Length: 254
Image (tube, rainbow, N blue to C red; front, side, top):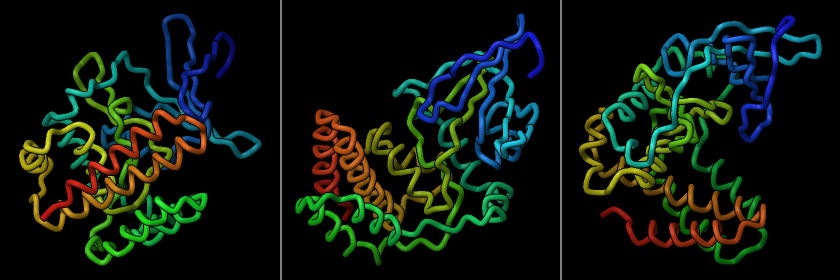
């Protein structure tokens, strides 16, 4: 960084993100961020990439433009611009090509279910859910796989002081069925009676196939969260996701 720069943690689960400041200058610095950050920056999906440096130990440091922004609220997620930005990401051939060049392969439903089966601690209820979910897999085999963010929580949507919208924190991105992103966004933020309008703004026909895949990935999301919060001993959150799982089962599409 050179002399005169001060680093302070920027928060986040990995502990690898920092804010670097020198006088009135401020930039966002991260260790080993997503390798396709340059493409995300070029397409205006994340704040502008300023530089990248590789350290002697092999770590890669990236610096991005600091934006004075704010997270979207829960209510703001049901907007044209979230649908538009997610559509831009899912339809980016450049992003998909780079991800594939890095050796990433599509995340298929079978792999997702197998991972949950390995995580399950002999809970017979979880096994029952997984067995049922497995029987539904033949109807969720999608041929079009895209780059998915895989964590579209409203905290990752940032608006700068010019009104530009960004989707940050790409560490968990996957090549997957777009329903992997659509399920948590629609179930988490968009009233069901508005789904057709939101999907129209996203540019997708709300077909029976798409609705079924969105529902299937919601079931997966619920189970993932149940097992995660159980593993860290957060019982209240685990119970909330058990409730969400029962609601999801009850809302099966026709």
